[in-house]
Length: 363
Image (cartoon, rainbow, N blue to C red; front, side, top):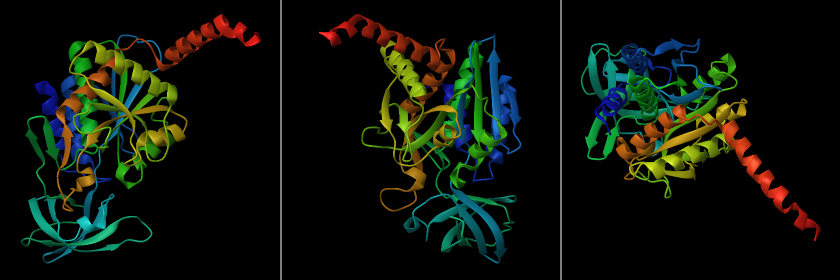
């Protein structure tokens, strides 16, 4: 992995974030866009839109989309050393009580322990009582995350508070960074959404608002729970579908063709093609609302910080997988053939087979 990619990855993964509270990530993305001269805007839901367009590429743009949030806490009130907070996102209940939390208060970071929790009906969230290590000013709206290291690199592995889906967000930036540095002729939109962990709220809003051009080719990018056939270190995953449904077959076939060509040309590029049933992702939303969407995934260790030992742990990704993801995104942006053209070529080949052999049906 080159140094700029690692720098971008660390800068994004180190930001505090919770569903509906993505401001620190947004600020870091804005700084990236200003440095690279990439157009930065937000829709009325607060989703971030990056637009890299150079030259006059033919056809519809590619939309590379990832979400900026991760399961976390938002405080609601404090009394003495007791702080109450909503936990937004999905983590199994056995991981919660007694686990350590880091709160990003205006006066500085403070730590606490989860003392109790209860369900908030009818929402899927919990209300948790946190016991501060020491008295501190923690106003309502303070973000909290599990108290694990923000970012660590050990050889080919990165562990972080939140790889899902800040690593996907970083991959979009790295791909655009590569295109901009080379002055590549391409038309790419980076759509970074809010509150995916709260029920795809940002992605649903983007569909309602028309944030995505109707003719665009969409690639959803996720860090998804590693599977036996898609382990950490196995390469970027061409995600055929999630736990809910499969995605657009034309986009899937095009991703497979581009990835296959890369694998033949470059020894370091690795990929696998799998259904990833460990959860659902935003590509499901885009397909349901009529967009032509496929998906790519990074195999993820300790999904949603749930370690195999029943304790909260940092999430993990493989740097080789991340590098392959960025390489594939850049190749898609530069590819002159579109999924529609690939489909047309495949139909022509099959029609030729029929024309040659149809007469044998009448023997």
